[in-house]
Image (cartoon, rainbow, N blue to C red; front, side):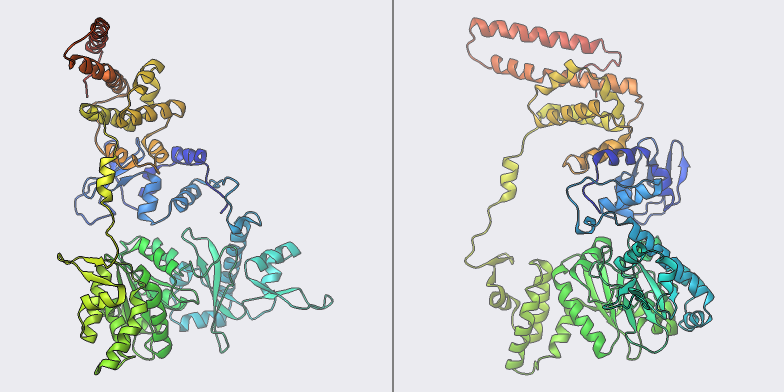
Length: 621
């Protein structure tokens, strides 16, 4: 990924997007007048309250309040980041995402990475074609219980037992071989005899091949499982420009493709485990890639779901892996998240167990998975003898560095409660010993010898700019008109806009900026306007206004109402000055003359409003 995505491209993308086609590919939409409706994909409902507007390129649910643009839908439904949503939408439209120079990532030092993605895809297709024609590999896949549908879903293939099969297929030139090396598909020899040996040889040989894909389905790397005896049993691609094993989760792309409501993810250890679990209908399984679960893995998981279950074999290696996962999970543990641990019977892994007992019985095991707090207490109890004081002190000493990884909050307090019960000491005393904290008179924890922070909320409120009191509704109405019908901004004259600019309240300044921007860069529809304000604090209010109905308004009447509103707002400084003069006990001659001029200005403005075609006058709306 190069630098920042140009705003001009985002403008083009939102102008060309078809939100009905996009959402319709994921949710069953039905035509309802000028709009489309469906049962909301973001909450459970029986009566459709989810509406999609092709005119505004905007969706809104009247049940749960979810709303947004095409990019917003991809971020919410597919759980993509903003750049990933742009990539996804651009891919649907056949567009390449440009990047501005200057903010390149390390992957960009050698130029575009797209050829590497293309080469990985060619390799995946090659391995898949080899599997279909290799009787021994097909028999192994069948013996492992993989159906043809699962093989196709995961693009599973086979690397034959050859030192140069892939090189012969995809490495016809030295440049091609170098790209294969950059993808981690071949290994460079330390020394070569140019008369007899190639400089490179295939990394994967005699292995069932599992392509590792990113959230867009692009092939990043491979995992290979030996099909006979041999070591290592699993072999992964090395770290490359595309692939960083501490970030990626095998099966996450397939999880997202299932389109079911995602409530939790289950993390297992092997590629075969993921494939067999999905095949059994447990389509929320993912696997780490030859490494322990990292904090980055967990952050990705908790962007998607609030519950994760780690599933390990019940042997010594499985328990060691669970303990490593626990250590990395603690910094991400907090209220609102569930982290649980499931240990399988001896001699079983998820692959074999789900094949033996099926989905329903396997999922029942998940109900008995240990919460993080219980697993931690149990594991520590196995390392210390709690029947005497020395052992309980050892338990506390083992627990302390682990608990300090947890962010302060309700979860940490409850975790301390659970651990304190194991060693028969009060939670308050344990808090004091570990964190120098005591429990205050109302039950909240305070830190000794540290002054409490000032009331920042009060400071923020005190320093908040105030809107022009009675004009708040008028400004809201004007913004609503512009959000629904951005084109009417071009009908406001320069003189009217200049008058509005004189107002110093926050609402008028925002309205001025909105109109000024739309005059300089007209927006095709609501969604394009909203995307311009994505990083601004005003966006949530603008989205809420976009979700409201605008009854009986075409561009002409809306333009007249907007003009009348601006004229009234433009009078605000005049009215304030008149109020100021009228409040004086004594006036000099100049001030009396000024009052007369101000009254004339107000009178003329009101007359113009009374003659407006909309009939609403300046106060309309």
